[in-house]
Image (cartoon, rainbow over all chains, first blue to last red; front, top):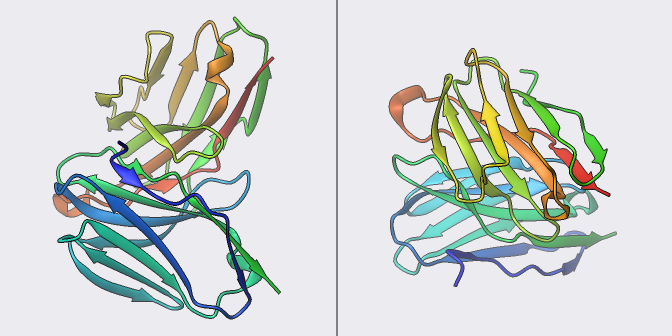
Length: 111
Length: 116
Protein backbone atom coordinates (compact mmCIF):
# COMPACT_ATOMS: atom_id res chain seq x y z
CA UNK A 1 0.00 0.00 0.00
CA UNK A 2 1.27 3.44 -0.94
CA UNK A 3 1.78 6.03 1.80
CA UNK A 4 -0.31 8.55 -0.15
CA UNK A 5 -3.28 7.56 -2.31
CA UNK A 6 -4.72 9.80 -5.01
CA UNK A 7 -7.23 9.01 -7.76
CA UNK A 8 -5.44 9.50 -11.10
CA UNK A 9 -8.62 10.60 -12.92
CA UNK A 10 -9.09 12.09 -15.40
CA UNK A 11 -11.68 14.34 -13.83
CA UNK A 12 -13.68 16.25 -16.45
CA UNK A 13 -15.78 19.29 -15.49
CA UNK A 14 -17.39 22.20 -17.34
CA UNK A 15 -16.02 25.71 -16.97
CA UNK A 16 -17.30 27.40 -13.83
CA UNK A 17 -17.74 24.19 -11.84
CA UNK A 18 -16.40 23.66 -8.33
CA UNK A 19 -13.69 21.02 -8.37
CA UNK A 20 -12.85 18.77 -5.44
CA UNK A 21 -9.53 16.91 -5.41
CA UNK A 22 -8.58 14.54 -2.61
CA UNK A 23 -5.80 12.47 -1.12
CA UNK A 24 -5.68 9.97 1.71
CA UNK A 25 -2.59 8.93 3.60
CA UNK A 26 -1.61 6.22 6.03
CA UNK A 27 1.07 7.74 8.28
CA UNK A 28 -0.16 10.05 11.03
CA UNK A 29 3.36 11.52 11.36
CA UNK A 30 2.83 13.72 8.29
CA UNK A 31 2.57 17.32 9.46
CA UNK A 32 2.95 19.53 6.37
CA UNK A 33 0.64 19.21 3.38
CA UNK A 34 1.01 20.68 -0.07
CA UNK A 35 -0.78 20.86 -3.37
CA UNK A 36 1.17 21.29 -6.58
CA UNK A 37 -0.11 21.92 -10.10
CA UNK A 38 1.81 20.44 -13.00
CA UNK A 39 1.27 21.30 -16.64
CA UNK A 40 2.49 18.93 -19.34
CA UNK A 41 6.29 18.90 -19.68
CA UNK A 42 6.68 21.37 -16.81
CA UNK A 43 7.75 21.04 -13.19
CA UNK A 44 5.31 21.04 -10.26
CA UNK A 45 4.19 24.52 -9.21
CA UNK A 46 3.33 25.09 -5.55
CA UNK A 47 -0.31 26.10 -5.03
CA UNK A 48 -1.02 25.59 -1.33
CA UNK A 49 1.07 24.83 1.76
CA UNK A 50 -0.54 24.04 5.10
CA UNK A 51 0.60 22.83 8.48
CA UNK A 52 -1.47 20.32 10.50
CA UNK A 53 -5.27 20.38 10.37
CA UNK A 54 -7.53 23.18 9.19
CA UNK A 55 -8.44 25.22 6.15
CA UNK A 56 -6.46 27.67 4.04
CA UNK A 57 -7.84 29.85 1.29
CA UNK A 58 -6.00 31.62 -1.53
CA UNK A 59 -8.12 33.19 -4.24
CA UNK A 60 -10.14 30.46 -5.96
CA UNK A 61 -8.28 27.71 -4.10
CA UNK A 62 -9.11 26.24 -0.68
CA UNK A 63 -7.06 23.52 0.98
CA UNK A 64 -8.46 21.40 3.80
CA UNK A 65 -6.61 19.02 6.07
CA UNK A 66 -8.38 16.52 8.34
CA UNK A 67 -5.67 14.72 10.27
CA UNK A 68 -8.14 12.62 12.23
CA UNK A 69 -9.34 11.05 8.98
CA UNK A 70 -5.93 11.26 7.24
CA UNK A 71 -7.62 13.08 4.38
CA UNK A 72 -6.73 16.26 2.51
CA UNK A 73 -8.67 18.16 -0.12
CA UNK A 74 -8.20 20.95 -2.62
CA UNK A 75 -11.22 22.88 -3.85
CA UNK A 76 -11.14 25.04 -6.95
CA UNK A 77 -14.00 27.50 -7.39
CA UNK A 78 -15.11 28.90 -10.74
CA UNK A 79 -12.83 26.51 -12.61
CA UNK A 80 -11.26 27.75 -15.84
CA UNK A 81 -9.88 25.88 -18.88
CA UNK A 82 -6.44 27.15 -17.79
CA UNK A 83 -6.86 25.04 -14.63
CA UNK A 84 -6.56 21.91 -16.80
CA UNK A 85 -3.46 20.21 -15.43
CA UNK A 86 -2.34 17.42 -13.12
CA UNK A 87 -2.76 18.19 -9.42
CA UNK A 88 -0.32 16.51 -7.04
CA UNK A 89 -0.75 16.28 -3.31
CA UNK A 90 2.42 16.00 -1.25
CA UNK A 91 3.25 15.72 2.41
CA UNK A 92 6.25 15.71 4.68
CA UNK A 93 7.20 14.73 8.21
CA UNK A 94 8.40 17.41 10.60
CA UNK A 95 12.20 17.51 10.65
CA UNK A 96 12.58 15.52 7.44
CA UNK A 97 13.05 16.82 3.93
CA UNK A 98 11.62 14.09 1.72
CA UNK A 99 8.33 15.03 0.05
CA UNK A 100 5.99 12.08 -0.45
CA UNK A 101 3.68 12.59 -3.43
CA UNK A 102 0.44 11.10 -4.60
CA UNK A 103 0.23 9.89 -8.20
CA UNK A 104 -1.56 13.09 -9.27
CA UNK A 105 -5.11 13.70 -10.55
CA UNK A 106 -5.51 14.88 -14.11
CA UNK A 107 -8.14 17.64 -14.35
CA UNK A 108 -9.81 18.68 -17.60
CA UNK A 109 -11.96 21.84 -17.60
CA UNK A 110 -13.95 22.23 -20.80
CA UNK A 111 -15.12 25.66 -22.10
CA UNK B 1 13.19 35.72 -8.26
CA UNK B 2 14.46 33.71 -11.22
CA UNK B 3 13.22 30.36 -9.97
CA UNK B 4 14.95 26.98 -10.12
CA UNK B 5 16.79 26.46 -13.41
CA UNK B 6 17.62 23.06 -14.88
CA UNK B 7 19.75 22.18 -17.88
CA UNK B 8 19.46 20.59 -20.31
CA UNK B 9 15.68 20.41 -20.70
CA UNK B 10 15.87 17.21 -22.70
CA UNK B 11 18.67 14.67 -23.04
CA UNK B 12 18.63 11.76 -25.48
CA UNK B 13 21.39 9.21 -25.16
CA UNK B 14 22.23 5.62 -25.94
CA UNK B 15 22.11 2.92 -23.31
CA UNK B 16 25.43 2.62 -21.51
CA UNK B 17 26.43 6.27 -21.87
CA UNK B 18 26.99 8.65 -18.96
CA UNK B 19 24.86 11.76 -18.54
CA UNK B 20 25.07 14.79 -16.27
CA UNK B 21 22.34 17.26 -15.37
CA UNK B 22 22.70 20.66 -13.75
CA UNK B 23 20.43 22.49 -11.31
CA UNK B 24 20.69 26.13 -10.23
CA UNK B 25 18.47 26.73 -7.18
CA UNK B 26 16.74 29.94 -6.14
CA UNK B 27 19.62 32.16 -5.02
CA UNK B 28 18.85 32.48 -1.29
CA UNK B 29 17.89 28.81 -0.84
CA UNK B 30 20.41 26.61 0.94
CA UNK B 31 18.49 23.34 0.57
CA UNK B 32 18.45 21.47 -2.73
CA UNK B 33 16.62 18.28 -3.69
CA UNK B 34 16.56 15.85 -6.60
CA UNK B 35 13.46 13.84 -7.54
CA UNK B 36 12.61 11.47 -10.37
CA UNK B 37 9.21 11.32 -12.05
CA UNK B 38 7.98 8.66 -14.47
CA UNK B 39 4.86 8.89 -16.61
CA UNK B 40 1.65 8.82 -14.62
CA UNK B 41 3.41 8.92 -11.26
CA UNK B 42 4.24 11.57 -8.71
CA UNK B 43 7.87 12.59 -8.18
CA UNK B 44 10.01 10.26 -6.05
CA UNK B 45 12.70 11.58 -3.75
CA UNK B 46 16.32 10.82 -4.68
CA UNK B 47 18.58 12.97 -2.51
CA UNK B 48 18.88 16.19 -0.51
CA UNK B 49 21.63 18.74 0.19
CA UNK B 50 21.90 21.39 2.86
CA UNK B 51 24.55 23.76 1.58
CA UNK B 52 27.29 21.45 0.22
CA UNK B 53 26.49 18.50 2.49
CA UNK B 54 24.49 15.59 1.08
CA UNK B 55 22.33 14.66 4.06
CA UNK B 56 19.90 12.08 2.74
CA UNK B 57 19.86 9.54 -0.09
CA UNK B 58 17.02 7.31 -1.24
CA UNK B 59 17.35 3.60 -1.92
CA UNK B 60 16.41 4.59 -5.49
CA UNK B 61 19.82 6.21 -5.84
CA UNK B 62 21.87 3.23 -6.99
CA UNK B 63 25.66 3.30 -7.18
CA UNK B 64 25.39 4.43 -10.81
CA UNK B 65 23.96 7.73 -9.58
CA UNK B 66 26.02 10.47 -7.97
CA UNK B 67 25.02 13.98 -6.97
CA UNK B 68 27.25 16.85 -5.94
CA UNK B 69 26.87 20.40 -4.74
CA UNK B 70 30.49 21.49 -4.43
CA UNK B 71 30.11 25.10 -3.30
CA UNK B 72 26.62 24.98 -1.89
CA UNK B 73 25.19 26.68 -4.94
CA UNK B 74 24.43 24.70 -8.13
CA UNK B 75 24.20 20.91 -8.13
CA UNK B 76 24.91 18.18 -10.67
CA UNK B 77 23.36 14.74 -10.96
CA UNK B 78 25.35 12.16 -12.92
CA UNK B 79 24.10 8.80 -14.12
CA UNK B 80 26.74 6.33 -15.26
CA UNK B 81 26.14 3.43 -17.64
CA UNK B 82 22.55 4.48 -18.32
CA UNK B 83 19.84 1.83 -18.57
CA UNK B 84 16.39 1.85 -20.20
CA UNK B 85 14.79 2.13 -16.78
CA UNK B 86 16.55 5.45 -16.18
CA UNK B 87 14.24 7.15 -18.70
CA UNK B 88 12.30 9.68 -16.63
CA UNK B 89 11.97 13.35 -15.79
CA UNK B 90 14.62 14.44 -13.28
CA UNK B 91 13.38 17.31 -11.15
CA UNK B 92 15.33 19.64 -8.91
CA UNK B 93 13.79 21.66 -6.10
CA UNK B 94 15.08 24.13 -3.55
CA UNK B 95 13.95 25.63 -0.26
CA UNK B 96 15.28 27.78 2.53
CA UNK B 97 15.65 26.72 6.16
CA UNK B 98 14.33 30.00 7.50
CA UNK B 99 12.74 29.65 10.94
CA UNK B 100 14.20 26.10 11.22
CA UNK B 101 10.90 24.64 10.04
CA UNK B 102 9.95 22.87 6.87
CA UNK B 103 9.80 25.48 4.14
CA UNK B 104 8.02 24.71 0.85
CA UNK B 105 10.03 23.22 -1.96
CA UNK B 106 9.99 25.00 -5.32
CA UNK B 107 10.64 22.96 -8.43
CA UNK B 108 12.35 23.56 -11.73
CA UNK B 109 10.94 22.34 -15.05
CA UNK B 110 13.11 19.25 -15.02
CA UNK B 111 15.41 17.42 -17.40
CA UNK B 112 13.68 14.75 -19.48
CA UNK B 113 16.02 11.79 -20.07
CA UNK B 114 15.33 9.43 -22.95
CA UNK B 115 17.45 6.29 -23.30
CA UNK B 116 17.56 4.79 -26.80
